[in-house]
Amino acid sequence: MLRHTVPLVGHKASLNPAVIPQICVSLRRRREIRTHTTMVGPSGSLSRRATVSHVIFDMDGLLLDTEKFYTEVQEIILARYNKTFDWSLKAKMMGKKAIEAAKVFVEETGISDSLSAEQFLVEREEMLQKLFPSSELMPGASRLLRHLHVKGVPICLATGSHRRHFELKTQRHGELFSLMHHVVLGDDPEVKQGKPSPDVFLTAAKRFEGGPIDPRHILVFEDAPSGVLAAKNAGMSVVMVPDPRLDKSFHDTADQVLNTLLDFNPNDWGLPPFEDSGN
Image (cartoon, rainbow, N blue to C red; front, top):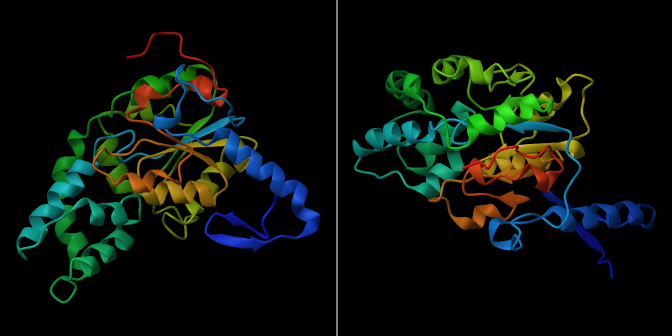
């Protein structure tokens, strides 16, 4: 039996008899595709799947192992104030635009009277610029990007990183990132708000050939809680590949949760299967 209100992303909508059929379809679709690694059956695949035609990737912590650099630098800065940087704070900062994350950092740690968000960014920037050029790929990233590209699945990047950081982080991986149909960065003029706002993903959907692509046919790969929420707010399906230190309560919003990109099975989402054994 339908209840009088139906939970949606970020709000509740009153039930109108005229929209009951659409709501039934939406709820059924959610039940069909929602899963976590702990819920996958013996075969390791989903019993049902969304129809996916396009794929959007986050970058930091998902394709590139750069989150460790942010953690290292922020720990150094906080040590001066005899404070520690923990994962509950990191979870609130991940995926956001730089200034938004900086405000969270100084306010949550209680150092805003001593260090402004802008001062924090200036200090952090000097250290990060020395670290970013050594960025390494995350396990399974190259294999998945190359596979989707070869199979003709349109892929793109949607990241909160601005252009200067993007160029530093990817300078050793230019050929791989050139496989993207397009790249949407955090300082893109169309991205008015950072994640969890859907701006970056909706902008990415518009720039595919033939865009805007229907969000229901887009699969997003994310590692950050704010990124997962941004994708869901855009009406897209999300595969989350979180850091194992992230609290598992953040997994609930994602449609699928994996340990690494090596665990991804394209068959789960109706995408062309891998031709090799993978790992």
